[in-house]
Amino acid sequence: MLIVFFAGVLLLGIASWVAPLCGADASRGQGRTPPFEWPTFALRDQDDRPFAKQDLAGQVWIADFIDVECGQTCSLLTRSLSELKRNSAGARLVTFSVNRDDGPRALSRFTKSFPEFDGTTWRLLAADGESFPRLAVDVGLAHSLEQMAKGYLAFSTKLFLVDRKGWVRGVYDGLRQEELHRLQRDLAALEREVVVSEQR
Image (cartoon, rainbow, N blue to C red):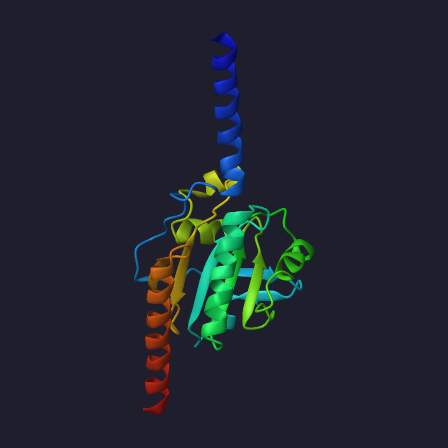
């Protein structure tokens, strides 16, 4: 009985260590309730090019947050975006890596598994120690900068739909098919808003 008890304690300890690293707990990263303005950020992409919020001005876009080393969950989430990209070729996607240890080389390697990733209309951005922690807190994926400073990985299964003025108009579960269908409908509606606005 004593051996079983210690084995259970060991497993619980391992689980509590692995979950934050992989973002395995699907209840993490719920994010704020829209509408809210997407925070300012300035990061570097998979090709080590600078990329900031102003580069998306006037665009409708979708954001997600992954750890490229987290395994199945993040791969499934990225496949959801790949499917979305196939069905909505003009969609602009921005994937934020949550792990500061994943530099441009690791990000570039991760994208090779997804043919829809073109590096232009879909960017994968590396986390840093300044801009990204503030972003994670401001969108509701972390409680505080202090939490981020302790190595918290602000992974989320949520997808954020952002309008051309930089406001989040919807948040969706990227692992549920019905939510992805709802996202596609809302994306199409926002894109029509842009067309109507340009015609006036």
